[in-house]
Length: 143
Image (cartoon, rainbow, N blue to C red):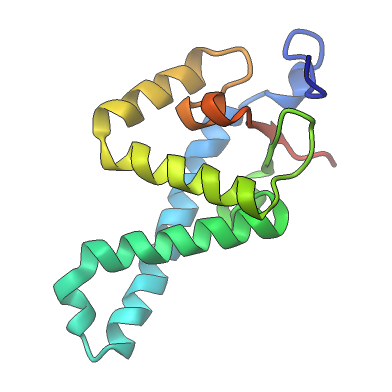
């Protein structure tokens, strides 16, 4: 039993969440690219030598901190969605770290990410693989 909204009776919490997740991901990816580019300039362009690692590290820190701070990245906030745990609470620091680690691992292995996307599109609550494993769910933010 969870304290999350029921997807059959409270559909408004889950409506268009998959497409909003994509929109949020695009915004977050753009922000992370800007932050990583700034880091490259600040390192006198030596950061270009380790661009993938730099992008990964900045992305991890960005996601973990923003999710811990408000249960949503800036992209999620703009898209009007947020993460909740099984009890309907916003994610804390530990939950944010675990969710970010799961996301990062799934992005590292394309087949896992494809499975996660398919799960988001087909499950009643729109949960990806990381969400299903952690018991988190993405909801439309309450007005």
